[in-house]
Length: 84
Image (cartoon, rainbow, N blue to C red; front, side):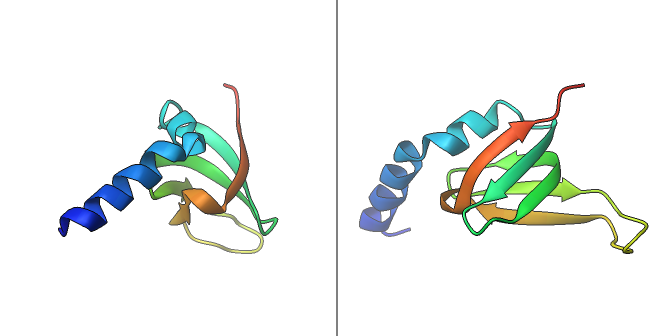
């Protein structure tokens, strides 16, 4: 990796505090609202400084198979944790 590119990535990672907060909820059920208004619900699989991975469960109606959705951290407006 180019040194300058690495510095830019590290700077971006440090300033995105929402993804830092999400890291502590890995493995839990969450609901994320994106800046475009989409709502994604599922289990938070992985968080890094660029994106989050959410495992969405399958639905019966309309039929949707189980899938992983990746969302950029900068596209997340808010999130909530579904309590057990």
